[in-house]
Length: 382
Figure (cartoon, rainbow, N blue to C red):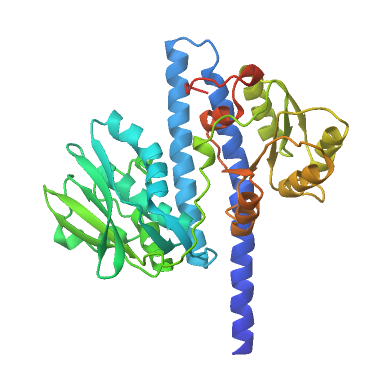
């Protein structure tokens, strides 16, 4: 029994190590590819060239979605994801979900509505947002006319999160099967651009981590309702959650150059290429120690962007903490990481550091950086 226990622990450790490596190392070439393709948009191309770029980006988007789904599922299966219960502000979470999905709904001619009234629940913020986002995404995909509603309401001592849609509905015999891996009722041709059929499978596992389950009711031709229950927050003190990086104003101070720290040669080249196309002055280093030397030399920078996992003895977080300890009036900082590391996120949030996860969309990064001389760019193609 002891040998079996040790073998199981070794197996779990091996899974954790593999997924940590996959989360970082397998994202790197995908991240670089996305950045290089974004650079193509700023070139003067004819209509044929622009069409090729659009198709490349569609394929990259499908690849990113598939990779994220497989990685999320693997982490859940390996037991790596551990919930961190805290007070979650429902209004703030709905605002973030709206920023992501409202443009898509408008593009498809659908109505996307939200209904909340200052509720707070005891949950894991990231997992709860993932579950509700997956349900909204699934509802929008299933709806061609009408709209989708994401609402909360009290029920039996719980706070219920409900996603209603006016889509095609689900047959009774499929109500359970939709939560199985790789099941897509509305994609018989297996179009990979529409995902792998893992969204609801991941949602079911994530809900279980929140000590809940997904309830579903549906009528063919009329639409569906998905429901998740969470306990209300009963604490006396509440600290509002920080706004996400994507919605923040430009961070770079004045016209000072940007300092980029990235050890992967391809990613560094792609980022440097984008910054040059955007007209942003910058300097780049391959490791934290060299970056810290530049900062300590007295050279003024308006923003530091660093990868988290770097060659050498220092991480991106180590670099920023050392910078703040050694340099008067240090510049703002962004950590870009491929790791979903709760301790890192907690430390970064406490320190007021923006964390962005790979693969980062160029347009989001551009909004945070701003334009030449600190002037914010329009939200066009990046």
